Amino acid sequence: AQSVSQHNHHVILSEAASLELGCNYSYGGTVNLFWYVQYPGQHLQLLLKYFSGDPLVKGIKGFEAEFIKSKFSFNLRKPSVQWSDTAEYFCAVTATPDSNYQLIWGAGTKLIIKP
Amino acid sequence: NAGVTQTPKFRVLKTGQSMTLLCAQDMNHEYMYWYRQDPGMGLRLIHYSVGEGTTAKGEVPDGYNVSRLKKQNFLLGLESAAPSQTSVYFCASSYRVAGRANQPQHFGDGTRLSIL
Image (tube, rainbow over all chains, first blue to last red; front, side, top):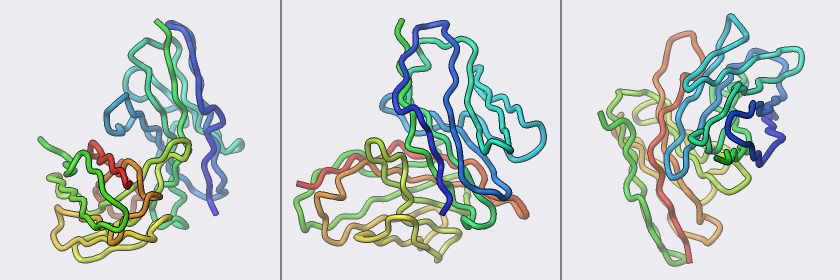
């Protein structure tokens, strides 16, 4: 069965530090990849997505992610984090067509930014 | 623009009681989903629907039933609530693009359900 791994469950950074959150998936075929963010007390929102084309994807709020097919990875990055980036971040993958177009979710990474 | 609306936002039940969670979307999306979110486990798909009148089981369907009688509504029912069903429940919806896989999902604000 397909799976998504987010290795860091908790990350604590200071403002202006650089961020990289890991996401690895297990599926050798075509994938669509997503990062969602959940701010405290809010619902999940789409941060960015990759369907095809340029493997470096830019999302909202200065986030970007790079799809590296050979490493089965889709890591999320931000050069300089802000206190307002404190949230939980989820990686999700659709392994088409095996998963019947359903999203397979990672367990999430809680990011805390110290002011 | 309401997007995805879930009711209620909070509920406390006793073991064995039944209840229905309502999800409504105003974006004319074909696909709708019910997830539960538990600490350290991310989101797990309970049931989903690819269109009016159709539903399918997700990863953790036991103890839940769903119905999609209208395109805009997706109901999640707990027939006999158990403490293990204490969780935060999220509804989501997405549109379908011919020839394309899963489009981004839009989420509701969640329902926090406690079973005593």
